[in-house]
Image (cartoon, rainbow, N blue to C red; front, top):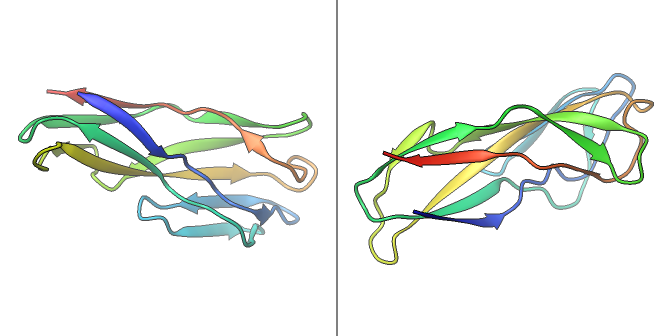
Length: 133
C-alpha cells in the first residue's frame, strides 16, 4: 500500500468575531461556521489522500487526536479535529490499474475570540492512519 497527499486541509479566511465558534470543512469540500465566526473569501479545501492498493482490499481509516494549530509569529493557538472522511471509517479498494483510491478528509477548527486568536496564519500537522486488512 502506498499513500500520497494530493491536497492539504485548508480552512480559508475568516473573522473570529466577539465570541468565536467553529469553522468546518466537509469531506466534500463545503465550508460552514458556527458562533460569531464570519467566513471570508479565499481558498479553502478538504484534504485528499490517494491510496494505491490492488482492488478488493479492506482499508481501515483511523483519525488522529485533536491537535493544536499555532499562529505563525506567535500569539495565538486553536484546536482542530480531523475527520470525517468521505469513506467513513473503512472502505474496500475498487479502482483498476493504476489502483488509486481517493480518500477525502474534512475537519473542524475550534476558534476563540479575537483576543485568543488574533489575525494571521496558523499551522499544524495532523495524522490519519490507513490500515490494510
